Structures are given as C-alpha cells and as structure tokens.
Length: 482
Image 1 (cartoon, rainbow, N blue to C red):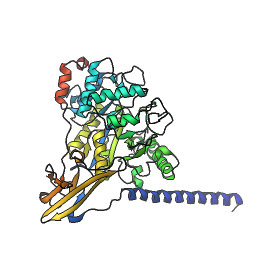
Image 2: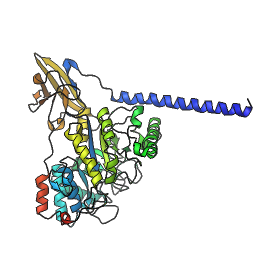
Image 3: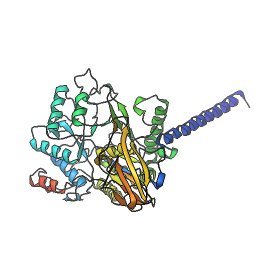
Image 4: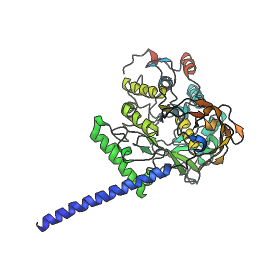
C-alpha cells in the first residue's frame, strides 16, 4: 500500500472515529434532558399528578401575531371562525379557544398593522378591550416604536379599562422588545424606550417571547434521537431533513456547548424557562414551535403554512410524547378574503377533531402557559385518613413568582391519578376544594380527580352583536374565493 493510500485510509478512519465520538457525546447529552424532567415520585396511597388536564394526551395552541391583519373586519372574520359555532363565511365555526394579539398603537406603516388599540376609531378600541377582558386577545405584540411616556399612556389606557395581559411577545426589530438583542431596549434602563419597571407591574404579564422557535414536535418533554426526526415531512423530505432535522440538531449542539446564547434553552426542550431581563427582573421566557418544511422563515409564519403543521402524523407524535406546542403564526398573513383558505380550514378542523376526541388540549397561549408552570411547580403531598385519600396543596414555588398559595383559578385543570376517586379529596392547605370532580378512566386506563377547567365565555353572541352593529362591514356579501 502506498503512502498516499495509507494516508487516505488513516484519514477516513479518523473521520469515522471523530464522528462516532461526537455521536456518542450527542447521545450522552440527551440523558441530561431526561434528568431535567425527572421528578421525585409522589405516588403514596396510589396518588400521582397527571401531566395534562384530563382527558387530554397533549396540548397545542396557535400563538398568532397581529402583523398584516389589515382591518377590523378581517380580524373579526378570522376570530368568528376560530372561536364560535356560528355559521360563518367559511362554514360552521370551530368553537375553539384560539387567541390573538394586538398592537397598542394604530399605524399605517407596512411593517405594522392599522388594527391598534390607540386609534381614531373607537370601534377598534371597543373590540380590543372586549376581547382582552373575555380572554381571546391574550398578548400584546410589543409597544412598537413608542417611547417611555407613550408607553405609560398605553398601559394606563389598558389599566383604566380593566385590561391585563399575561403574555408579552416581541415584534420583529421593535425597539420596545425585550431580551438580549442589541435593538431590544424595552428592558434597558438607559433607554428612552425602557418600560419594564412599570409595564410588568401595570399589565401583570409574566411570560415573554424573545424570539425562540423550535422545530421539535412537543416541548416540555425529554429529548431523544427520535425527537429530531419526528417533524420530518415525507412529502418534502430533502428540505424538511435540512430545515427541520439538521438545523435543529445543530442548534441543540450549540446549546449544549453553550456557544450561542439564543439557543441556550434547546438542551432541555422546555416550554418555559426563567428569563432575566436587562433590568434584573425575572419573567418566564417561552418557546414557540413551527415544523414547516421550509424551516423558520417568512413562509412558515403564514396562515397557509398551517396545512403542513397541523398534520395527522404531527398529532400522532404529539399525543405519543405528551408534549406541548405553541405554534408560531400570523393569521393576518393570508391570501385575502375570506382570509383562511380551504386547505387551512381543513387543517384547523383536524385540530378541532383532536380536541373533541379528548386528545389535544386546545386553549389560548396565556391559559396554556399558566397551566404549564402552575402544574410544573406545584408543591403537594398525599395523606391517608381512614378510607379517605387526601391531596394537600401547599403552594406553587417557581423561580419567577417565588412561593405563593394558589387560588382555585390557579389550579384549573390540575389532575391527580387515584385508585379511589370517590374517596379522594383535594385541599389548598387546610381548605377542601369542593369543586373537585371525579373522572372516568383515561387512555391509560387510570381514574383521576381534578379541579375542573373553566372555559372562556363563548363569543357566538358577541360576534352576532358586532355583526348587527356593522363591524363586519360588507364582507359577507363578497364572493369567497378560497
């Protein structure tokens, strides 16, 4: 064998060894993710805490930024289909708790939306405030380019209308954004756009999205090698392999090695994480998800992309791993009236079916995030007294809000497995929760008790009221071209 051949052979063997070594490190690192979710088992007396509200196997919400929603009529047409069982221009509505967002100031700039809270149109103000109070507008999409005093006026308008929001979502490169990027000045105490010292206190938001989007199907669950391939779109195999699989593995590697700050949460695949703002306040950061085969791009955030996101195989995987997904979306980025195409309507109806079957818990971003952290950080213990099995909830203890005694509303959906639901009682400290209900066996063939979920008020009549007032304009008289 010539020296050249020997050199080539040694090079190939070395590359293989290096690859295997990296692969073994990769597999070993995934065990860290599993340990992150390992809980001290509390299963005395046949009682243990369920991960999701009964009877659901997984959870999903669509977190839609308001960008490109060009009119009140467009907004109402979209929400009526999503939130009601009314007869709409797209057929009978879904009747799901899918929320939306708003810009605080109306602007005609192309990168923003003419649909804003502060405007010369009091009707828009009325609708936004109504739907914030009813829970269907559940996050503010930055304060755009406002300065400190303008932001104070905005928060006062919301406060005076009794409107509070749990979620703040960054918008593009708005200077009032929060987080580590250079242009995000909302938490920079030296900036004229600094606002978190009063906006967090006034609006009461505790969840902040600073830009993190994952292609993993299901957050809040341990990672495995399979996790990186679960979102693979077989119809677009090559593009999906590159954009959804290889890129996600690379981001995970950067996260594990601590190289890239914006991917720091990837190694645990958690839905939320403690986020320290520049002014040293803590909030929960959270991760949105998008498994569109072209990757995280401008196409991925459009209404039509839901066709490739809300797929049967995605629901199967999500139900299998028990994860949570907050889908990154802009319902306003569509092909015009009636704003949701027939293909996207079918995808959304598939989501509705998964919900009605008791598979996927569908609710607003705010409600899902609150349930997730309250369930995750719940401190409780069981006891036995005669034939009674008692569940004692001591507090919720998390790295953002600290320790506090929860109210019943904080515990909505919390479910405990028990062998004897009839004789199982739930207490907040020493006070029994009389609203607790017993459940039949679930898909695991296990019985349970829970603090029942509380649905948002249905919008059927509210939308009919808006239609009578003429807020839909003349849209229903147009010819729909899906």
